[in-house]
Image (tube, rainbow, N blue to C red):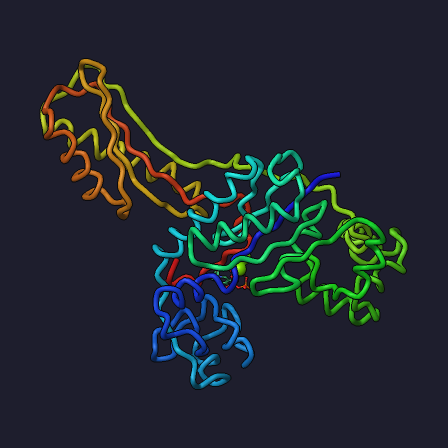
Length: 350
Ligand code: TTP
Ligand code: MG
Ligand code: MG
């Protein structure tokens, strides 16, 4: 049997702001804004949630529900940094990590030798190391598959830890609402409610064939999930982390105007290739230069992708040497999440 931990940061963006501005603590806080009431919220702290404030809610509605809410503009750079620190902690426990979004991941610790391979002790350690590294709390679920680990991390939020063991699991989870199942959205919930299905236990009373008749292929998944059965593997980082184009010239080039033309062509090529990856967010851009003597130099930074920026990166490096150039490469590095479904940032801030 596997040992899976699902880790999810508590009210992530809002918690980062509370950490950095302690005077916000204890007040209802929404991340989004601006103050005029336009736009939608990325998230809110738990004080604001008491008023019914939710992620993706229009700011104007949040202000109606909770007139005292403090609104802070998102600072993605800070959240990305905290996110990277969190994933670095996880990497110390196992190489089998599936990042699901900016603030959550599955980690397979079946073969982790720390804490005598006790997954609960490992989860405690992960949470305390995350707190130490970032000053932020995370919640975790410990179980033997992804479904139950994920449900577990939500059970005692914020700052909670839940363990779901296999003995008698179908009975133990029978009171869980169907909304705990990933993939059961509003429409499916409505359909289930019409049939009198509200909990895992209600689903358990249907045959597999019945569920297939009602929900198509998803019926089989439902039949398994409502009993706590889930055979999905952890999907580790297989996705594209960067994209680059490069060109080796017929003969080495040192003429600036000639290099300009080549750079511009390469930039167009890069943009073309990128159009097939429109769903990905660019983290860094980089330039690679190989000189006539085969020495290679690269420079990378986190500025917007445009020709001016690439050209100035290129110049910065090239001016150091001014040697004839054999090859030029341009590229971008992406933010990496194996499953982006969870993070749907309001467009204004994307
Ligand atoms: P979540 O983990 O879904 O939410 P959360 O961490 O704010 O709260 P909790 O886990 O304690 O319930 O999302 C992580 C971050 O992703 C969240 O802080 C802000 C961002 N986000 C958006 O920008 N838009 C969204 O619609 C959602 C759901 C999240
Ligand atoms: Mg979270
Ligand atoms: Mg999350």
